[in-house]
Length: 401
Image (cartoon, rainbow, N blue to C red; front, top):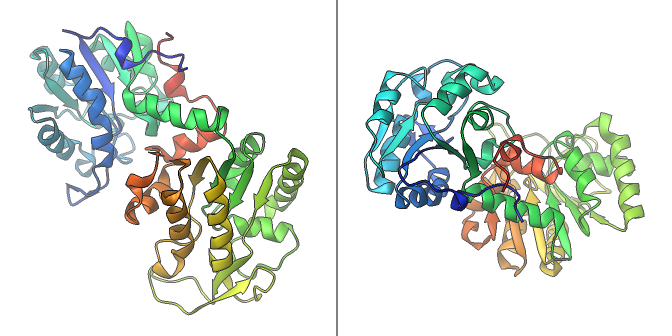
């Protein structure tokens, strides 16, 4: 049970509600190339509008580093939102975010109106959780709703600071859904519970591995991070990505898994090449070898066919699966086989399948398996920290039930 207030616990009719959304969408020449995050925000916005609230939206976009940069303006988001909501969205085009335009737009609001503020990161204080900017945001509203899970691991003005200066604050539907899926998976999984971790760096996943060794039944490891584990077992990994400073740590984790009765699966074969593709999607010569036969002058960039089979068969027996990080350099079709195999196995299982944002979410969507997953997290960094067992500041700041 989520101990924080949800948007459904609020009485919002006639009230000004500031909603922190995650509209950090990719833009190319001012055009939104992936609108998943806008779509994900709609249920909360539409619910508040149906309840007769005056809805003020805010978000960051990209990293303008505390100064107004036109290429990071939320103006294109306002246009797309208006189309989705089928009503006008007034854009408060103030470089200082809470300026004359925003104040005027909010003052003129009727119930059911929508205003979108400019990129919160145009203000340098945003990322430092500065008091003045938090108060300015709070001055526009009566109630604060945080629906930006993607920024929940950051203590910023628009995610945490503003909550101190309003009567009431609550989680939006997207936030509640993230907490439910990730929280249940980590704290109360239907077993067997299998976690798949990939991606390039072991260092990024240390705390996740440590936490999951006390929760999961099986840990599947692929991607660049697996070669540090293989080297820790005394194998020759050639020019594959290795974090030599983490070899002892990997040894310790393998021993701890054994002691805890947690199975750790590592690649048994891999796809190797002489040099990293440049550009990343260039065609290069490859061959498949056992992980005991990687030549000293070659590097592995994907898991091999036997590993794909091994990982897929493990997923088939699971009841809960959490996946974070690709199995290889999936941006190149030659090295995407491992990631495709895992995505396919997850798509075909009846288990609860949770994709932990970031690259794995991108991979699943690009490969067309998105609608087959139980939940795709909207936050890469935030979902990782949640899997580490950390309390996220953006959630902690909400009013208790």
